Length: 108
Image (cartoon, rainbow, N blue to C red; front, top):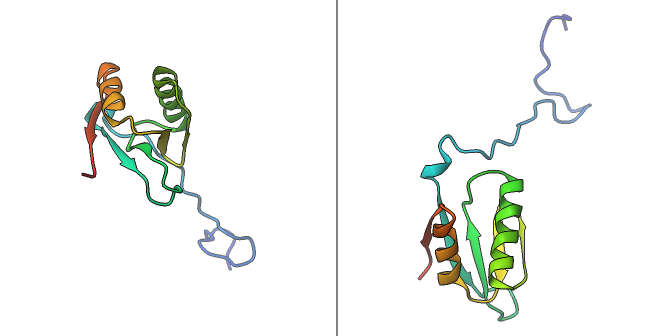
């Protein structure tokens, strides 16, 4: 193989091309956060899930911390969604709209 040829695939060194994680949207003001209540797969306990949050992981964790502080409840922010313990759909929708995010209720 000539030295100026570019290596595209090889089984020896693993993955050559890396995909940079691009979580930022072109226009974050157009993004709509979705809020829904879930119960399945959680031992019968209700949680409120916020997903499609614009921005990266830092924005997700910052928003999750603000929601938890406002509601006085526990939760987590990881894997692109915020999980809040309990059924707080209406309160989270109001909080998101107060801080300037567009938000909608999804799932029944």
